[in-house]
Amino acid sequence: LKGTRFPRCPPRFGARNTSHQGPQGAETQERREAMAMSFASERGSGILLSRVRLSSVELSQFDKKPNAPPVWPAVLTSFLHCVSLGAALMTWLRVCEHVVSPYVEEKDVKDAVKVAAQTYYGRLLAVNAICELVTSQFVGVASDKHGRRPVQVAAQLGQVIDYLLAALCLPSFGYIGQLKEGAWFILFFSRGIAGLLGNYKVSLQSYTADISTVEECPTRMAYLGGALVTGMCAGSMLATAVGVSKISFRWSFLAATAINVGIIALVVVKWRDIAPRKDYTWREANPFASFHLLGTNRAIAMYSALVFLSSFSLNMFSSTLVSYCETFLNMDAPTFSALVMMWTLESAICLGIVQPALVREVGEIATLQLSFLCMIVFYVLFCLLTPENSAWVFVIMILFSMGSITYPLAVSLATRELPPELQGSLQGAVSVLETVAKIIAPLLASDVIIPAYSEPGQFYGMVYFVAGLLLVPSLWPCHELYKLTARMNPDRTVMLEEIGG
Image (cartoon, rainbow, N blue to C red):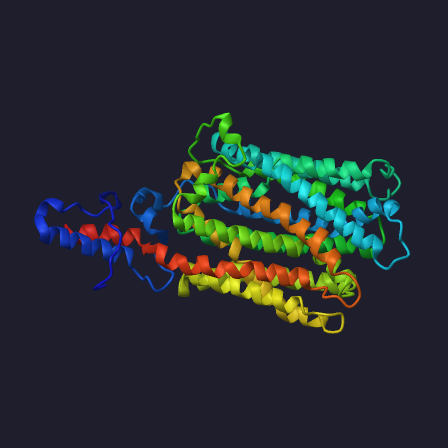
């Protein structure tokens, strides 16, 4: 440790204040603090915090939470929500095709309806995201005051309304007729309602942070991510089964609705709020009221940049993947379903097993760097695929799965930078970042890039080349975080005090 300077560790860390003992005592104190904060600095042991945060954090925040509820209801909520989301996601384009078909004049042109449906779908996503942006901060501060449960229930209720109305825009199976007149506007309304009632991730991630120690949080956030991709796989299988059965796709949305109703019951019965409550004023409902939290220190600003870049590229990918594989790669439904299943299985393994192992071996920042690099390489390779060599997607998909580590790890590291009573506000601010990405990315992909490169002989993969190019700047914040962070081990700090007497 010779020649290395570490930020001073205040007495509340548990180390004894020896300033009254003269130069020798102060030197001993500084050496203890340096040992505590540099414990296993080359690997993932100890707790990674910004150097600013190390100067103010209290030791009590590292205590175990023996009375905290188990994490499995939160993980199950993530899984079930994404089963519902996956079933709907695989079906939304079918809804859009039914809605836009009467308005497409050149139906004889190859894929004209599909391209129009993709454009309409991108706009639906944008409306949903704009409405989500309006209430994202209110959802965060409301969860700080009233608890995470009612906010999560409201988010699930929004999905119930959205999916029910979408189901009615599809062909009937004999009971309730299909909505045709006004369907164009009804879907904008349903998507808006779902957005206004809130992003389910705000309360889910806040709740997980509440019941976890700072050491447990990254792993548990990874579990949420693993449940997310596994749920998406199950949902896509459900939608594929409906398609293969040649029955109305309305069943996919009805199944999704039933799952969201089940989530409401799960949250009411099994979630238990333990976070300290914090009152708010209506001024704090401003969507950008807590945006200043993302600039609390330089480290959390870097994490925020990584969250935004990850969300932006992911939304460009997820909002166009189904249409791109069908239209430009000529991929049939069984092949696409197999791809989704492999992707979700690999992502679950990366989030549940690979991420914790990498964090232990090389640390959180190196894991973030590797994950972003994998994502960049994936987009570059994916954009080069053609119908003739599209089978290679099964080989390169592992790179995208490794890239799924970026979002939950960056969010979990950001939660360490603020006290428990601000976690809801923090997640609201993170949701603003994610929502801005959800607004811009689908519009950029569906309204600008894909239509500009959809003619024969053009570079169809430009949309994914742009997605990869936008991720290149992520490597700089990762590099800066090495200088902005340090490690500490609270157990080691307390032990040093006891040894020193």
